[in-house]
Length: 174
Image (tube, rainbow, N blue to C red; front, side):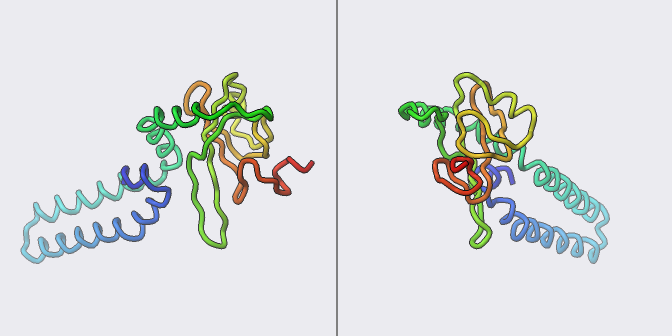
């Protein structure tokens, strides 16, 4: 589950639709087999395994939104930092940024999260407030700013908004 969570923004769907049902089916078959053979210890251990699997899976799925960025940042921050710092400084007072994460479905739109380097740490207040808004150095109104570490932020854009594209709710046409 953790590897699916880290490597794919759609890992939760694969897990819910394929992996969890398969593991549950296997455990239920093993439980039924042990019950038919009247092996109470094997029944108990299989049942406890199934309960533990479901409890841990549920906790991971419930907290995926917080765990995924933290784990990705822990594993690959050096790579993302190097890529972003290799960019030239923007000339239009925007903050340096690269695409950090994204998801979406046909017809529903794409959602993008940008990794942003803020040398003055001005986004710290936005990250603490958890309020949507228009923040200095970001061209659009955004629903969420999350702090990864000092001066490094994950900025969630609204669905179908992209950094630098002009849309009706991006704030660039006001």
